Image (cartoon, rainbow, N blue to C red; front, side):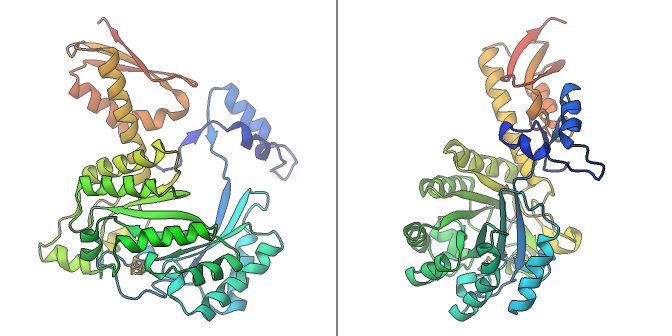
Length: 383
Ligand code: SF4
């Protein structure tokens, strides 16, 4: 199932749909109104677009045990200014210029590990697009131990408004075993420096690294959320071809999480951020081009983020079930009222949440009623 689910159009995005979108001048609003009147849903409007500028392993001081940027199959970006500008220009031709945010994103390596002149060169290629208003921001991915006040200033002065920090874990033991080459102190320091430079921060954290446990992953999420970042990405560790983790796995020294364990742990982590209103911009790896070739073992799923959201919905349904039917674990059947707009998440992949609740609570039947905006509620049924 695709991660992007069908949702009603939020009020603040309706105007995008009111603009002419077809050659004959008809508006999408008409189609949307028709869908809504039929009780159907329309895809969530896109609010931002990213121009990916992939710099695999550039600026990395070593190789972290889990990492293979080449597995993503992205096209490496030329660092020649003219080609870089051409690439941004090419992307812009495919992007709706009315989107609220269009950003150029340098990722796949350790941006601030590059020589300063090279960083400037790369950013200067994107800067004219920012100054002319054709893009609205520049994002770079980097390591905490390569952030200092001087390079934070360089980033700020060249239009970078978001830094993605590869934190991975806030356990020193896990960082050591991942061969990150830095500890937790560098993370706290980098966050302070970036905040002082008024640069937004996205923290990337992982579950299932060597030495990691469910409790350590949860503690990482709690500590990362306490740093009040502007967003987070959560990845389960998978064993990619050509990595040190592959060697450890083949030697029997590393056991990856199962898919179900990874979903449980990442659901715990996601919940920590959402409870603090910190957006989780992605849960799970980006879909790989050749997962069959690149993945040796581990909890890879192309719709991992959806599985995590569905697990959180299942927990919510279970709470409701326990609260509203207290002490009555032998009811023959029940009816669950669910919000129509989130029904896919509540029902789960292949109706797995319904199956799980039926089995666990020994229900002969669990009927689902969908209603726009309904809070989940349950009542027992006579059969
Ligand atoms: S995780 Fe980041 S720092 Fe480590 S090898 Fe990969 S790109 Fe480089």
